[in-house]
Length: 142
Image (cartoon, rainbow, N blue to C red; front, side, top):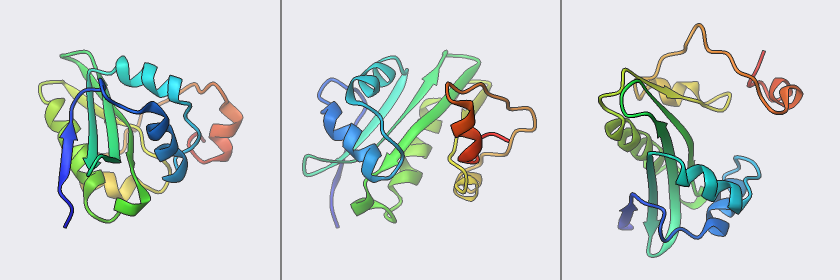
């Protein structure tokens, strides 16, 4: 069984490798420079490596008291099914303790996975997307 190393900062992240991870997961095209910006601006970030290879990542935007928003959780296809996604979410939730609410944005079809980790659907969540039509077509917005 592989031994995983957790890294909680982004000082040594290969942003091109992370970008490729999102592409093959598949969670969309996220350019390396964009990932560097959003992870750098996130209060909590987790990266999981196996023998130097990026196996998973996730982050949480948090204000320190009111709200923590978990997003961009990704696991390499070679490591899916090994509880890494669950471990990432649990770690980000633990880091977010003390916030009045922890919010998670999930892709359609993943609700069951996150409900097992304690997340509940929100009745009042609403959003404005840069590409509203694409969000509607993908099932994110109704």
